[in-house]
Length: 191
Image (cartoon, rainbow, N blue to C red; front, side, top):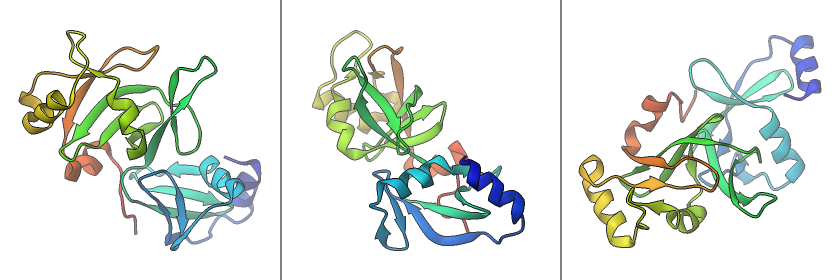
């Protein structure tokens, strides 16, 4: 959290919270009301001061005021970036590296990661690149037919793994989109 935010919280401890102003979309972009935050400095400020309370409500600490965030999907949105060696690296919407410890796919084909930073959806624009990293445990690369069968059968299907460079293979777990918030402890629409 920014030092100026910490000082403002100490100076004005009882500022009421704000709901319904800030939203995080499925691509990891911030929206104030219905306007995209296009200024990189403001987006970075929001990201540096993005937190969660004990009940799973995510908020932006704007000085002394908590601005609660409506989540279009999940509290974190992951992207792929190349690291210094040119290998793909997972980063969240704030630009911080995130190390996946689990992966799952819902019935609509959305890919999710559990990381040390939290649970989130992978930006849909990254799916083409990440599908290339899904394998059967035998080492055979997953093709479209294998993926479609897996989606149709869920837990009953042959297991699949997500293999990211420099990390252990992650078994893909079937997830139910409508159960994600409860299972992973976040509130999509605080209020």
